[in-house]
Length: 585
Image (cartoon, rainbow, N blue to C red):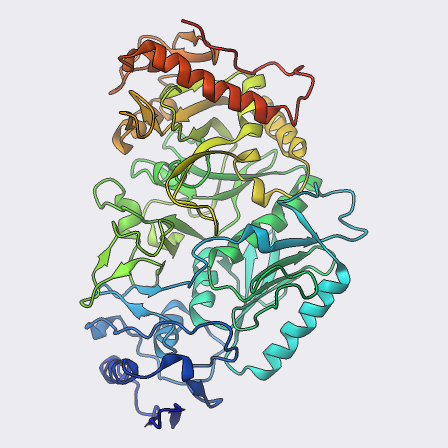
């Protein structure tokens, strides 16, 4: 028997023992959700056996939404408030709906909202500074230091919080491969957070682990107390091998925390950790796609003609490329089934979507960014038909840096020298399109993110840059800079963004070897090598796309000035070759 009480005098009771059929459970869930529509949700509190547990009034509860109309997407597992030892996507989806953590679309996909934090919170993310990390981490505004005693305070708070909660779930996962990765025991309050972990990490049969991660959104920090800056906190302790995520709902904090863990650990093992996607061609050659959010990293790697290895996080050892994850976390704003069929087809029961807008009939509007431009979907690799079963591939033949150039002055593709590869890797230039960070703002703006992922790389940038050059030179890989941004003019001033189809054709000619042997000529100013005698559905030389050549020169020089100014932090004496020069007509 389940009881839920409100201070409005409403009592809801129902037996759960005989609710094994999907239809019976659907009718209960619909009744449950609809009954609560007119209730003052902030006043809800639950008995230990209720579906909803709001143990912290400082965090507003999830909106209670109506569910879709199709019963077939519910599992046949008997309903129970108790967490079983065997967790799976059906059970976790069911549980999330019963706890009113989210709702189902008309296709049976779980949709949740993450509240005011619709992206990562970099200002609330810290690394414990102690004897182990003191000399190894580049301490700055990104890698913020946290005192061990402050970590102990919040760790104790988290453990006491768990003792008072009966609704948390625990499971163990592999992050990275078995030889070089880590095992992490994940504990969550929300069922959908555990579903996220199941979709993004690799499931294992045993429970042996070295790391622990606690994601407790109802354990809310107090700003100004023991190092916390707000009501959200992420702390990684490399000595204790523990991650605390407190007061936050956004699922991406979990995956990026473990990404940071491996990015710290792997360089010591001579492995280059990368913020990139990877796929494999029929010729046995791997391609890597480095890039920040919005550059096309996920979209371009999910090519129906090539096998996907992974869409975001990888390691490059002397013998192979391996995926850190067991799933994908794709942006779905403006998702189109024709332009991105692989992502679209992966949105099936068992997947999870964050902050997408759903109407009363359960239909998703992928073009609605009213909640955030950073709408996301998390799904396992098994939902992708054409992926590499081993989750790994041979060392790459082609390395592609993706940049979304808002000035419209970079070519659709250029081939980089070793010095230029170092320059553009450390620069990490792109336009920030639909920020993945809280406070990132709306609209499009230039950004420079070291290693194409500054928030996730705790060691000094040159550690990763040197590993990049070492690996590239070992296998004589070609490095290309591909512009997925604007041409024919600047963003907002007559420019047009390259279509996905155009960029796919450019990438195709890289991966099939057509560009490897062609002739190249320099682009003045940037001194980038652009291909000659190739057939692209766009101009190879960006200057030819601009009607006003003076306007091109001015825009190019603005970007060149920003690139060089940003790079001064690594090369204050301007000794590094590979820098662009002022463009002249």
